[in-house]
Image (tube, rainbow, N blue to C red; front, side, top):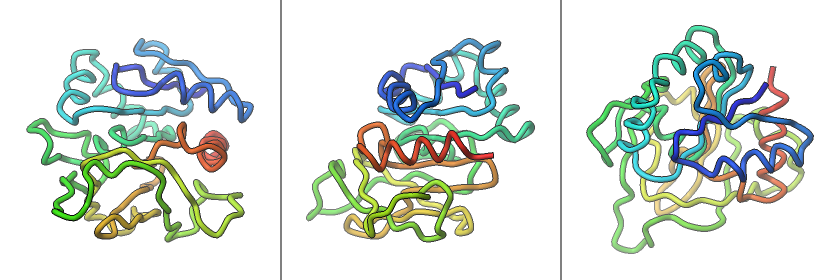
Length: 202
């Protein structure tokens, strides 16, 4: 069962609808007993880093998510802000992240770029990852909306990169933990295929 974490920070309905279009049912929940039965977990996210971590803390979900992802090795996907909180910290706030991937979140710094980075952009599949399987175009295009980027220190975890002023990490994978900076639920056929690939991961 796929559980989409409802902690007030993401497009949970859009993600659930996109999964349903690929043939996979999911449950949107913040209930610990429901999350505890999950085979796969999606951590969506729109908003600020500290607000996300505070919300997870207030819902008493941080230890449970750690148990599911780190101890039980259940497959988990962080989307946008949900990916960023996989890191240890962020320049956007003061609270600690989940710290499952060796990374920090940094703010785009440029006088020439429009911030936030918003719109369609290309993801370079640097490791031919399962997450990007069965996408038959030479350019993988996804929809982004973010002012901060994932600065990944663990180079072995980087599976996707995108250019915006500089090349930044746009997708990560460490064992059972996956993250994407873009919004698959807003990315049409590529996003649909990515969520299908995630649902089919062993």
